[in-house]
Amino acid sequence: MSQQNYSNHVKFYPPHHFIYLPLLGILQVLGIYKCFTENSQQLNWILFSIVIFLLIYLSLMLRQHYALGNQNRIVKLEFKQRYFELFGKRSDDVAEKLSFGQIAALRFAYDDEFKILLEKALAENLSADQIKKSITNWRPDLDRV
Image: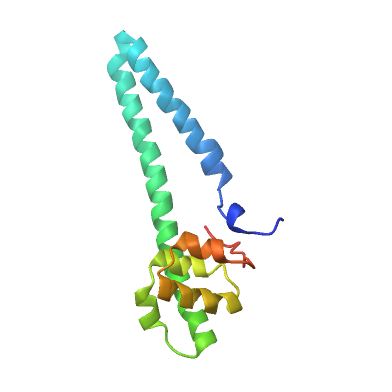
């Protein structure tokens, strides 16, 4: 496995991203095409297209909603635990000053860089993307959903 870094840290789920969604996309295009070419069955194809659109929408929203909601809670808890381990105190005041994106970006930094980037993020209000780009020694997160 190649080393994880900024340019390759996005993760895909092949059955969902490369089979299910493309298949639904093809069916959606077919349904819309048939709406305009099959005048005798136009209402059926419109209903077909609406159902396919709803399947696409639901598959995207439900899949993301549950997994990301749980993942976000875990990332916040990991930040609090890590902060406590490094600084020996609670992180409540610090965590309130950071956005979730900033907290999530900091997880890719090893402890020595974490301290520096945390201070920089607080002082300069770095965006999540700026934090990720500032990391020199990338700490992979291979267990993400």
